[in-house]
Length: 425
Image 1 (cartoon, one colour):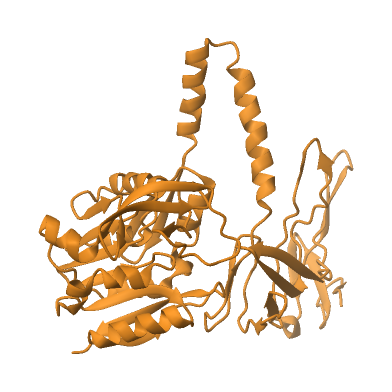
Image 2 (cartoon, one colour; image 1 turned 45 degrees about the vertical axis):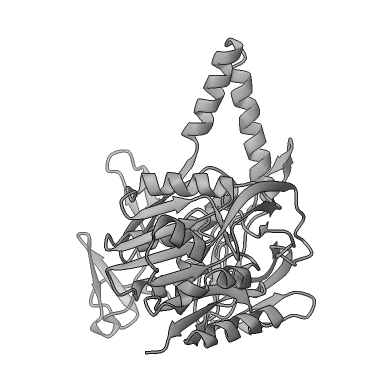
């Protein structure tokens, strides 16, 4: 209820004003007060009203968001949303402006569903969501990335490219080409990621590579914890290093000597740039080779040539069995068995080994029998299918060599999951 004005000695629910001083009754102590008043300019009689109205009720609504991640649908229903900015997009030329929504969950709960046979999980903690947030359940079993359609960024990119092409038309052909390439070079994205052990700089030459700095802390928290547990000094092999997120994290400690193996040429180039930009040449060594069960010249069957891509098959038979995998390029590549590589170049057995080779895990282990039999190797982290004959074969092989399965990593619902194995004491 609004307070009423009294001439003096206000009772409860009243106030008085004298010489610019507001007086209230002691019964109204500690109550929040919103004061509105009118200021009159002496001489002219001009008035200025300063209002402090109540905000009123905030409209709330439900939102249902749909996207897909790596060919799998994701549907998220937000039960109680409040909008700080809600714009209804209209088509302008060949692009539209998306809406921006912030939400809160006072209940709190939301539902995440995946696929035609939904697996739903309620979120039990209060969160704020945006299109690019990673939405995770408390037990971290399911994580979804909600992203705006990639076509939007592509249309903006094409529009900006046409602008640069127009601006440079007046230059001579080779100078024009050089100018355009310098613009592209200047626009290569660089992102610092803060970790408990220091900062990592990711250089992302293509959009696909942005996944690694963006999702670094949420994609494989079990791998970060595993690396944190390294007993140093030690040697760490990162087989299937991609652009180097976990090689770079391990490399933050100078007493960890890291060998990173990545056969994809675009990933390997980005990996080398990241090592250089982070000043880790002394303790991270990168090799553009595949590890296999033997030394062989074969092909890396790639469905994406972008830096940061994954899901490639090495060897004679396809190892990536997902139906959406479509090979677009057969990259000639050299493969070594781990044992032959060590013997050829006189390398010691690693203490820790991470293996992420998209279905070729058993062949890599078959070529590393001497290495995994050596007691020096303490622990192995492998990305595997959650179940199936290949996974069972892998478990049986490691058990024969004295390794015990310790734990699963975060399950993103994509079929593959990390498994940690430690050697018996």
